[in-house]
Length: 530
Image 1 (cartoon, rainbow, N blue to C red):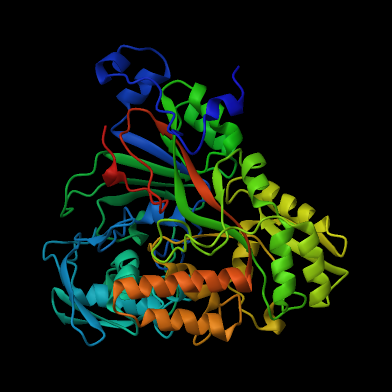
Image 2: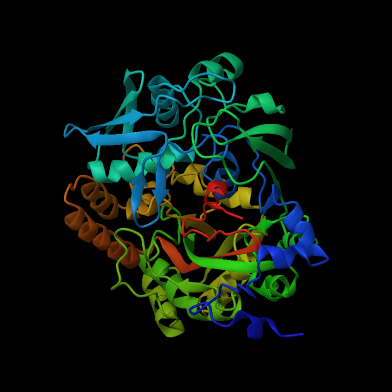
């Protein structure tokens, strides 16, 4: 058997593992898994790493959830990484020059229960997301729609969106996070202005997407079928089943046996197994997701910039990528990845320097500090191993002790939303990942660093906060990009995180499905062909 290293080639070269090109006619004459996959391709299964724990499409900000619910509650706009937003349910839009943009909607869109989509539905959906008085607490409002102030219906098909930032930034935000709900249905059936939508029946889902829910087992499986009255093109598969498996090995086993047709978050050590399986292949792309360890600076010893910088110098990011990730990643020294508007190419990753780290610890006055790093298991590529490695590297310093604590992802997610009030902080140092899916640096920084009206921030620094807020008001795209590059340089200097790496997205896919992974980690079935 070939080794993992031999099978991987290099993540900076091909990393597609496309295998032999085989015609459909040739495949159908084969026996075994290949032929069974072909016969069943009007019905596919997608296996995620985390099954949604809520059915409210606005009550989450996790990629796995979007992968399911975007097919039911479709985006109002089409977003292409690095290119911007394009028409979908929204046909056209125009900034009015007064802090608003008017959006014209299609007039032939219906919800799965038969109600027609109106501008009032879209406006209410946006308001429910950003207004805590009528919605549910959700990080979408803070991180995804940070500059959006509200929306109102001008007429049946025209929505006016108000924002407190430059139109270009607002477009990044509402272009990614507008997903229409049926206002009347949601209020009457689920009291949606007072609480999150819940339920265990297919009728508890009601979007405008190309698929409607036909079977639902809470926490385990959701089955969707083509929606006959969908306004757009018919999606490629009649029936799609979404499920989840927390372990990469379980997802790979399901792919090998033909129980699933697409899996996410394949671990580097499982790549060779997928490549050698019949009828499947590995496809991957460098994502927009950075992995890092926030340090809440309202809690000692992380209130010292010298100490935070020391933690960065203690860690060998290049070594982690090459060993723990087998090359599936890129070391990073700023909050966002290449390809994001405002990424600063002049900012290099911190390089491990034990002497520098120990010297900075002494300068900080926190020599002898004992800290604990909380890291999740099963959420990111080799996350527990990375967390343990980071803690071990810090623990090698002569004047700092560090221990890793491996926990469920929900623990670090809650820590990330706990804010900077010292009385509310149980965990001050943890590992998490963040995908800048809007394609703009603001999404990767403002929720973490801006101070006004942001109780969920993880870092308290007026200079960094002011730099982000000032960038939000710059209309000229080139000037704003330059300002965002300065934000990233400032973040590198202030070291609010132990910066680690940009993660590779690795998928296992039925080889007859024509589909390329996206940098924003989104899976859209309508992008697939067979």
